[in-house]
Image 1 (cartoon, rainbow, N blue to C red):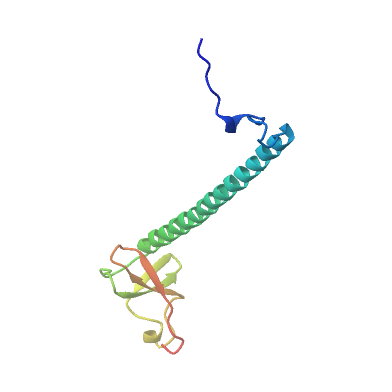
Image 2 (cartoon, rainbow, N blue to C red):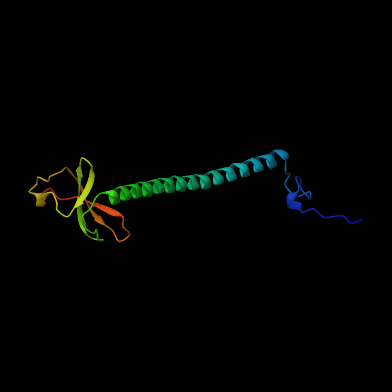
Length: 136
């Protein structure tokens, strides 16, 4: 019968008289320190992933909010063809919102209906709100 040799570094005791004594307490401490180290490392990685998930969730919510706003703006009545890059102004009537090419200033600062905002339609048909200078 062959005897399998066990690597000396995996033994819980010294393999020669000159080797330092390895106690079970020392081995247990080593295992405990390794477990703590692995747990801290694991916790750190999982924390990074959790933060990334939170940021992605916030970004997804923002994208959905913008899409809802864009859809609402596309529902506003419009008597002209909206073109990318064109500045258009939103007003509110009793029966809904509508777009106009005329800014509040062009109405003599007294538009016929409450002014809701100014937008530019982007090439992807989304809208970017433009904030008019109070002097405009």
